[in-house]
Amino acid sequence: MIIVVRHGRTAANAAGLLLGRSDPELDDVGSLQAQRVASALAGDPTTRVGRVLCSPLRRTIATAAAIGDAVGAGIEVEERVIELDYGDWDGTAVSDVSAADWATWRADLDFAPPRGESLSQLGVRVRSAFDDLAEEAREHDIVVVTHVSPVKAAVAWALGVGDALAWRMFVSPASISRISTAGPSPSLHVFNDTSHLTPG
Image (cartoon, rainbow, N blue to C red; front, side, top):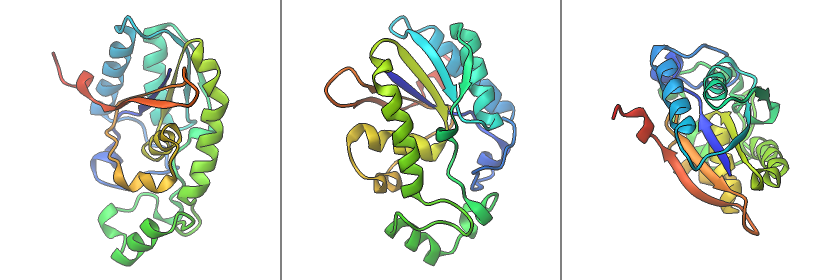
């Protein structure tokens, strides 16, 4: 199983900003979310974590470190699961992107923000990473701590569909999705689970 975790919240997430390669820390809520994700995975008797991978940004490293500590695994950086590069739009309020730009973005997978990256480019690198993990994930669970756009690309990979699916998904901070690679093709078992974030 590949367990795909979105990092905990940052102040930029809370403010509704596009957050790509900018590198803020988790905020207090995000740190608590990371601990709750870690506790949920460590406390699940069906989960056998062999590796914990994360993007090279601090918000994913902090979330992955909490998980690694809880499950007794070191963390490894995987560059291919870094967030979409928003280029000149990084740190911009979502509401400040023009309606025309949003329409173009949604209609064209090859569209990229100025000096940024397209969804098709992101899809290529994320699919490559998950292709490389698929066989190993038959033997033990691999946790991949990443960002909203790579989570969506991973789900599209699991379902065998195009990257346009990204526009039809919502991924919460510190959510858990699970992709099985046990069969002849990947299959999505869980998507955007946040039940561990609600105190029991």
